[in-house]
Length: 233
Image 1 (cartoon, helix red, strand yellow):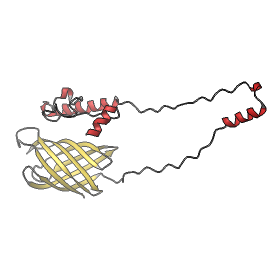
Image 2: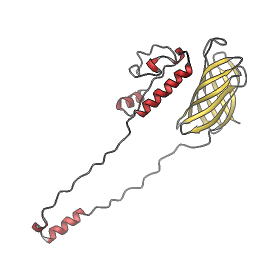
Image 3: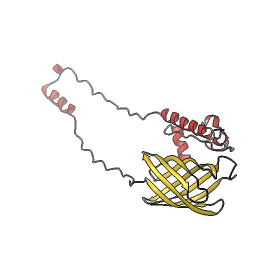
Image 4: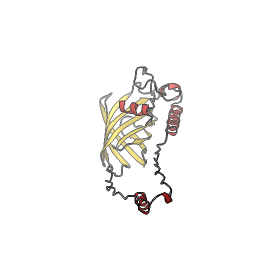
């Protein structure tokens, strides 16, 4: 976070706090920054949370549009103007022509930049979800349907216990870390705000953590945390 705030101060990046739940963050390092959603109202305090997340998306998009584009300035040097030709001897004129001739300097060959290993991260992954809150374990799945740049579309659900599922969206970085958010629900258990943070250990294995927060009080009244271990089918 310290590095991100330093880049923010230099104008090289934008740090945007997103307030999910009510909390006293006045003493946090980022307390002076403009937070989202509008007026720093926590997402959980909105009567319509979809509207809250829409406000967050608009705020992030606006901040990206306000970032200054990098520009390079070329420095041009002017050569001194020679004296009148009639005032120079033939030898002086030849020396002047030699000085004007551009020198060709050999440039070292550029080394290819290292690239992160690439592989197909889309597909269906199944495995276990260990609910830390209630110390129970069940089966779950994660279907990654589309990856466009850093944007990821997926579907997540539990095959046992909650029997809830839903669509998630998020991002993936160069370290193969996935961060997904969305809503999962079923007729029996109601709806939950779902957040997943996980890693591709290799092309066929994913490990990470999940958080479920009830959107209504008709089923479970506490937030649930757990760990995921998934294998490509």
